[in-house]
Amino acid sequence: MKKEIKAYNNILELVGNTPLVKLNKVTKGFQGNFYAKVEAFNPGHSAKDRIALHIIEEAERKGILTEGSTIIETTSGNTGFSIAMASIIKGYDCILAVSSKSSKDKIDMLRSMGAKVYVCPAHVSADDPRSYYEVAKRLHKETKGSIYINQYFNKLNIEAHYKSTGPEIWEQTGGRITHLVACSGTGGTISGTARFLKEQNPDVKVIGVDAFGSVLKKYHETGKLDEKEIYPYRIEGLGKNLIPGATDFEIIDEYIKVTDADSAHAAREVSRTEGMFVGYTSGAAMQALKQLNEAGEFDGNSIVVVVFPDHGSRYMSKIYNDQWMEDQGFMNTISVEETQEIQF
Ligand code: PMP
Image (cartoon, rainbow, N blue to C red; front, side, top):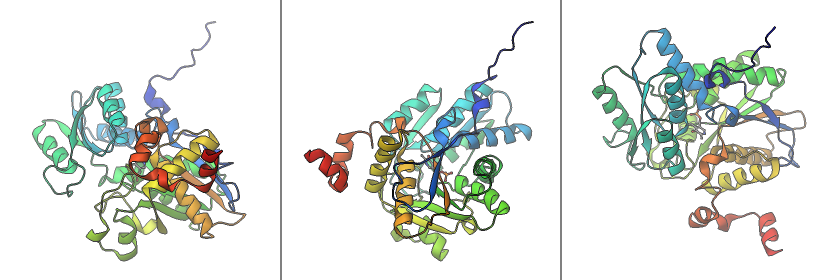
C-alpha cells in the first residue's frame, strides 16, 4: 500500500492556528504570567493573513468575486502582502495603494508577490485626493469588476478575528486569560478577539495599544476626534488619524500610548532576549506591557496574552538598522543596561 503524502494543498491552508509562546526573560521581574500570540507564524508572516482570507472567501461565497476579478486595498504593507498571496492562489489581480511611510522592504515585497503598488504621500489628511484611501477609492471606481477590501471600515475584519484569533487564545490559555493586550490600527484584531473572549468571560480586561500622534486613545475617552492629537510618528500599522469603523470602542477597556523610540527598543529587546524576531508594533505591544506592569496593572495570578502582529524581517532598514535608529535620535534614549554594555 502506498504511504499517504503529508502535505498541505496550498499555502493558504496554513493561515491561523499560530502558537502562543511564553515570554521568559523580557518580562523578568514583572508581576504575572505573559504569553505572546506570535502572528509571524502565519504564511504571510502577519495577522493580516486571517482577514485577507476571510474577506476574500466571504466575497466568493456571496458571488461578488469571480474569476479575473481585481482586489484593491489600502495597506501599510501587511494586509497587502496577505491579499497578494491569496490572489496568487485564487487567481485574482491585486492593486495596492500604500503610504509613503511604509518601508522600502515592504513595498518591494508586495511587488515581488505580483501586486501593482501605488505609493501615496503619508502626511496628507485622509480626505485629500492624494491619500491612499482616496486613491484606492478612485481605482476601485475606475477598475471594472473590482472589489475594495476597505479594512478600516469592513466589519468582516472584526469577524475574522472573532472566528479565529479569539477562539485560539481561549483554547490555548484553557480559558484562564485575564488580560488581552493588542495593538489598535484598523482595530480588527483587538475588537474581534476581545468580543469572543468577553463572550466567554466578561472579566477579561482588554487593553489597546496606541501611538503618540494618533487619535484613538482620546476618542475612546471622549467620543470626539481631536485634531490636535494628530502628528507624524514612525510606528507603522498602529494608531490612526481617523476613527476606523472596524474598531469596536465599547469592547476595549482602555488604551495606552507608547512612543516610537521605546517601541523600537522594546522590539530589539524581544528579539535579543526571547529569540523572537518581531516587528515594530510587537515592540509597541511589549512596551505597553512594561508600562502596564509599572503601573501595577498585573498581579501574580494574571495571565496576560499580548499579540505580536508581524515579523522583524520587514524592518531591517528601520528598527534593526543602527544608522536609522541614530538618524531618528532613538539611540539617545538607550537604556542604562545598554549603555553599560557599550562602555564595557
Ligand atoms: N501591527 C501591524 C504591523 C499592522 O500592520 C497592523 C495593521 N494595520 C496592526 C499591528 C494593527 O492591527 P489591526 O489593524 O487589526 O488593529
